[in-house]
Amino acid sequence: MHGAVLTGSPRKQGTTALLADNFVEGAQRAGHAIVRFDAAFRDVHPCRGCNACQRGESPCVLGDDMQQPSPELTRATWSSLSRPSTTTA
Image 1 (cartoon, rainbow, N blue to C red):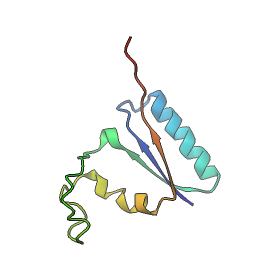
Image 2: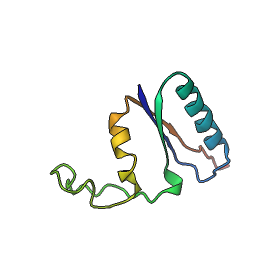
Image 3: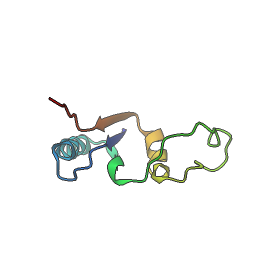
Image 4: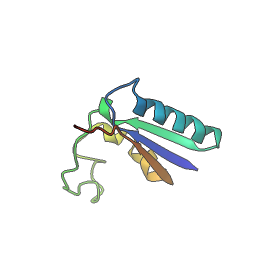
């Protein structure tokens, strides 16, 4: 079974990264093939809705780092999102 783990924390050694690390380790021990994508350290842009990818043109006109995990995300049967949760007092 294929899984995708996406993280959104800018802290490489933070608790969100630790949570994702342990989740990935457990999933791999259970026999899952995992792709991990740390979005905070990548060049990622929001979709413009131009539909070039739907028309079979280039994978994406943005040419950002989402081209790397895109095939793995499509193949994944499940996904996990890890992000920091912040509050203000």
